Length: 314
Image (cartoon, rainbow, N blue to C red):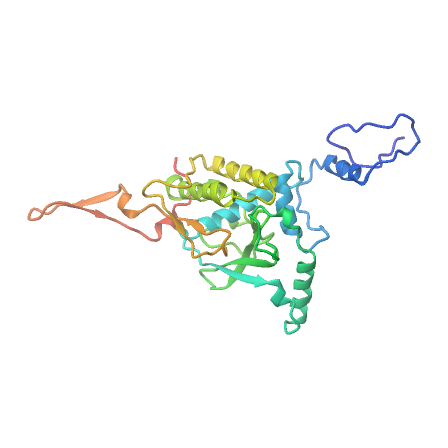
């Protein structure tokens, strides 16, 4: 009976000429073997990576590795988080950001538990080459600070973290949401999911596509790229998100499809957010007939309508 020492691989690896004799290989060979392992059938989350940055590493691997075991699920979570941030104005979400500086959190005056965790994050921060952004300021790292995003619950007025800004993936969604976000049905299962089935064509999909196109064309194409291959992989993922929306994204949208500044909510990483169509371009009008006055159109504006338009247009 044969007993396999390693799991199955995606491709057949060559064996030695003489059975029973060890062959010498470089350390790189072990990495090549690891990249060839097959994980077919694994659908659960993986939470055992030995680093405090494990969530960021998982999302990064899902972007750059097409064979990552939970890639589809992680990309759905990333897309869902991006949709919540990009459409926060339309959905009237109270999105807030808190900037954390690890150097300050590592100070002796900080609470011991916070100081220990911040020290661990700072000591094990990813390499600068893992960033998809431009060159950082001199003697600094893109990983020296962390921007955490929260959304206030409309009913309880309590806030929950939904993710953080990651230099390797722009956004890194939270692995688990404390409660569903009111008005955001793709957050109902305890985590973000694919938002596409819940978005209407003109009200949501077009502004979101414009916003994603802006990220792809502007933010991810700096003059000096730290890691061109990672940038290209992330651009392909964003292009895939846009294709799911089945609309043409425009980084410079036409009249009526503006991209607003989002109060620099992303701390300089995401400086624009999708915005609803201008009211003056709305073609839905009611005409009041008055025998004594000239007929004038009346435009109806309902602030609650974006939340009610959850189903895709047929």
